[in-house]
Length: 278
Image (cartoon, rainbow, N blue to C red; front, side, top):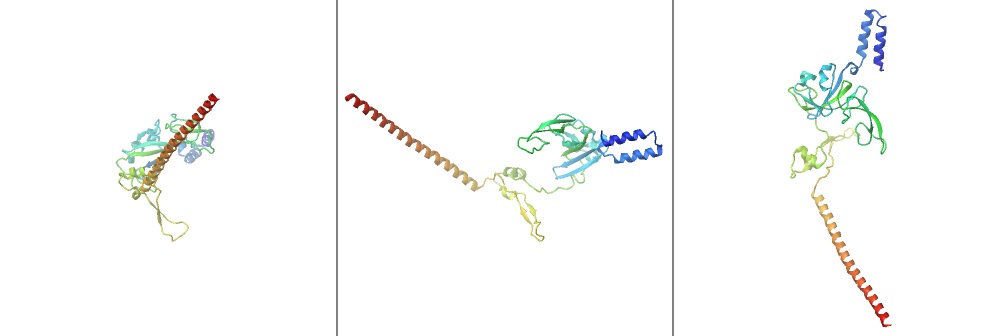
């Protein structure tokens, strides 16, 4: 039984002994100290990938977030009931926590908490040793009234802008690193030079106060350059030479082996002939 429940039980027990003018302010003060999650509220964490912004709102009225009940992770929901500013918005559920802080796990099709044996590679678990497995409590992926924090992502923007969510576009700090992903990000063709489109960021030294800012960029992975093609041709040539040399050595060995066999047969024949003459 939680501390809040004990408080409420104590209030009910002493209600008959206290006057009405003392009992009402006491109940009001206790109700102010009860956390939002215990009063049937939900915290909504909304992210907008288009702008890179994120916003958290507290919803006290259950009728506003009841639309998320019985929805699973990765399911899309119309967010009109959250508020007038969310009219026309469509969001996708990405996760959440229950009131005790246990995270929702994708694939667990239950509206309550379960204990699962988790290993390396599973979500909601970080192994401390190689090969370690552990039974941990996780929340199912179906949203229910026990969810305290729900994370959603905007899939479709509505009619009006929301301050702190759709009004400004935050610059992308780190861009893609792989060559194919850079081409996909900037919609480039194979003839374009990928090295000119790397996202660079400005860095200033923290050790020197008056240091000049400089830019940093990631090393492009899987980049096909003329040097890389030359190295590949060189490796192919080495493999070809090795195969040719092995063929020549095999041919020489077969010639030597046939010569040795012929010498051995001649020696055996000479021995047999000497025995017959004797």
